[in-house]
Image (tube, rainbow, N blue to C red; front, side):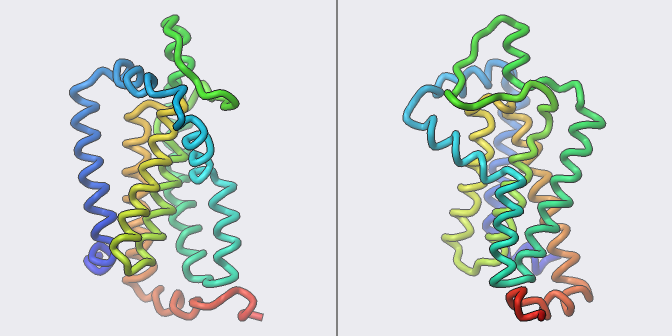
Length: 218
């Protein structure tokens, strides 16, 4: 466990800083007022940026990325797939079984007759808001990419990228701030545990044999 922490310390500490700050904001701020604060920034030059960067947290994008990485390194592709699958599976499980009545911002504000500024071309969902699946996926993916890198600057870029994908969900009114905060924690926590199992148990011997492209298996 300590080895995984040391190898990805920068990403984990940056997330811890974000998470503690976010939780403080959540407890000190009304979630509707907080969302309206972020919503004021919509209809700006950032619309297109957040409209497209949000797709990084989409399952289809990650699966395509895993398929591409398979042609370079099976071990890394398998790590990303397992981290993504387990963390996202947990998020979807609690989203549909425990928080199925959590409405998304668009429906919440529609019921209150408060108009939201929405980005053109984005079809917003209305149910299953908590937690954010895209955020879980993004933090899981970039946790792995940071874990693989030995460059501290790359690790920081990975964290910033995950945070931008998460914020895109609030910017697009797909989620509340608390949704992405929970999603980020799940993504990091489960990816950390998966990496501990894969790289600090006897399984690592088998994983090391997979440090090759998939075509070399045949």
